[in-house]
Length: 357
Ligand code: 5AD
Image 1 (cartoon, helix red, strand yellow):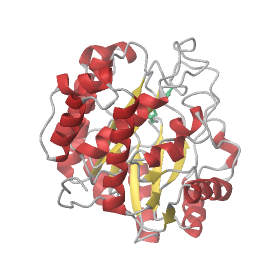
Image 2 (spheres, rainbow, N blue to C red):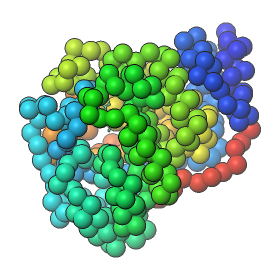
Image 3 (tube, rainbow, N blue to C red):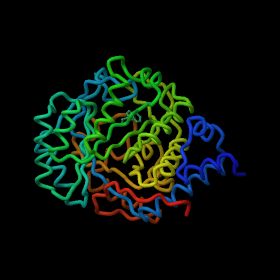
Image 4 (cartoon, rainbow, N blue to C red):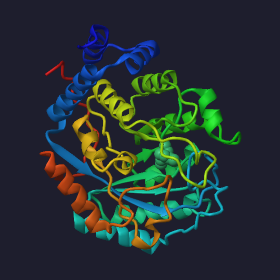
């Protein structure tokens, strides 16, 4: 039986009305199986109305796992002395792009830890070279917190998009899962700067990170509703054996899927990846993500030699597959559920909100 209050809240969202933190918390705490299915099918219908059964592929190049930060949940945190560190050279990064381009990728996602080696000068050079070589491709950066000037230089060099999950909209939670030198205020300053400069910006959070309550997730959803990122990354927290959270349990896939659907309802045009973490906890996790309203997948383009070193959490999916096999596997998974993978930059576009279906 559908909960009438939840149904009304979903219709409110579809009619472009804003929900409160209490509303989001109510949904997260009170939904039943029927509500879950209703939210899933509404989100999926919206995604199909806007994108068709078409999935954008982004090739992710994990170019350095050296990180000055110490996020308590993350396997490449600087205190993890068991992590074998690496840094790709510019030529190695370019080789990944070349492979990726030949496989049909038109977006390169350059992701790394916060590695001081990649100064503005070094990073601008990498971005410019990719921009000159692949004029029609989008360049997405996921390299953490930097100054506004730095973000601007990278944008001017040719970067188009930036992924920086906000991690937690609740300050207290943010401060529990990060060391005190990593400032909540700076995270949000970065997100605002990125948007102001003109990037397509991605925010997001993990589901089930230690100490997180439904109230906190509701605050995250509220933040997403207000900030309106162009992209949103949400996946379950998965413990990593060499972090302080090694004994903690993984986040719920179901709750992650519910949140993804709610984001699709709130921001119909949002670029919503079905995350690797989803696929890592469950074999068909990434298919489930798509069926709940996701429209992006991000296979790995990193060289095989470093795959097993970029581990933010245990049992990461796809570390044994090379770039070609990664995309083939994902393409097959998408085809199994009736979706096709498209060769396309897949930029964020403003489309008038559809009212229901
Ligand atoms: N489990 C799931 N996701 C994680 N991330 C970092 N560590 C983990 C983990 N243990 C996510 C963070 C980060 C993104 C790149 O990966 O949200 O922003």
